[in-house]
Image 1: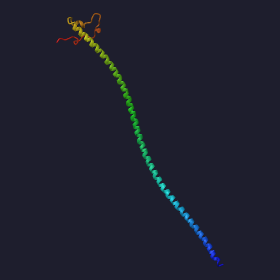
Image 2: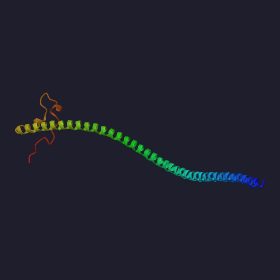
Image 3: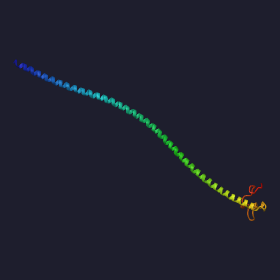
Length: 168
């Protein structure tokens, strides 16, 4: 039985050794798992910090864009108002041009009429002057008096001192 004892001790030693190996393996697995969890947590913390920074940046940019949008809206409103004012001024200017053209037409017609009247008066004056020159032997009162059957309005305006020749 003395030979069996070392065999018994060695059987216990082997089982302890196996148990130790199993425990060491379990410790290695747990250590590896713990290290991977630590890395995962570090990664999560880093990602959370980066996400926070990104959120802050996006918030900052959104605020800047809102402000820029307000400015652009204000500028657009001013431009539309300015365009409306210009459109109104254009309508008023067109109305004024139409009014001025009508006035120009009236004045042109009036000027044409007066020009025709002056031309007729110049012709009459020329005829009178010719009659006066031709009729030097006649009295000066005869040409200014209406002829028989004519009214004073038919002969034209009364002769004035400018119609009669003056002797120098």
